[in-house]
Image 1 (cartoon, rainbow, N blue to C red):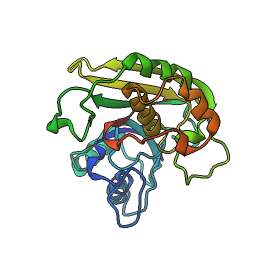
Image 2 (image 1 turned 180 degrees about the vertical axis):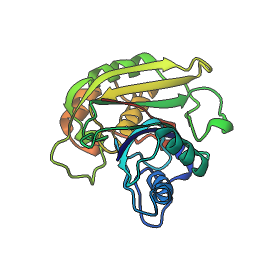
Image 3 (image 1 turned 30 degrees about the vertical axis):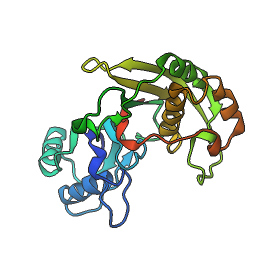
Length: 246
C-alpha cells in the first residue's frame, strides 16, 4: 500500500533530510519508526527532495510503501506519538501505486528569513541574524532578473557535476513579516532547485543589499557559469521549504 505524507520539521538538530550512515537525519528518524509499524520490515521514504543540515520544512511531502494496510488517521497518530517533537506529520492519505512524490512535482516554494533589526537569540536557529539594514528595492530588482529560465551553474555547489543546470524560477518576492517588520521574507517559487541554489541566491542578494554589488550584476554572474562569480552562501538556519506543488 502506497501512502502520501505531508510533514514539517525543525532541522536545527539534524544533519539534513537525507539518510546518512551513523548520522541523525530526518529520513533516518522517520524510517526507523515506520520500520516498527511495518512489522519490522524496511521502509524507504521518497521525499520531494533533500534539505541540508539546519534547514527547516513547513510542508515537506513524500511517499512510502507499507506491507500492511493501515488506516491513515491511525498511522498519522502512531507516527506523531513516536516521533521526536521537532518532526510532525500533518497528514497521510493512501495514493495510487504509480504516484511519485519527487517526479510528480510541478513546482516548489522556498522562503528565507532575515532579521535586519536587533539581534534576537531566541530566533537565531530560525531567522538569519544579519542585524543590519539592506536596500530592499535593489534586492527586489535583482530577484526579478533571476525570474525565468536560466543556467544556474553559478549558484550551485562548485563540486556538483550534473548534466543540466537549467532551472526556471516562476515567481519571487520580498515581504515583511507581519509580526516583526524588521524581518524580511524572501520567496522563490521554481520548477526545481540545485543544491545550495537558494542560499547562494540569498547570499548574492545580501551583497547587493549592502551595496557591494549592483542588481544588474546578476546577468554577468549567470553568464559566467562559475560558482566563484556569485559570492557568499547564506547560512542554513533562515531557509525553509515552504510548499511543494503537484
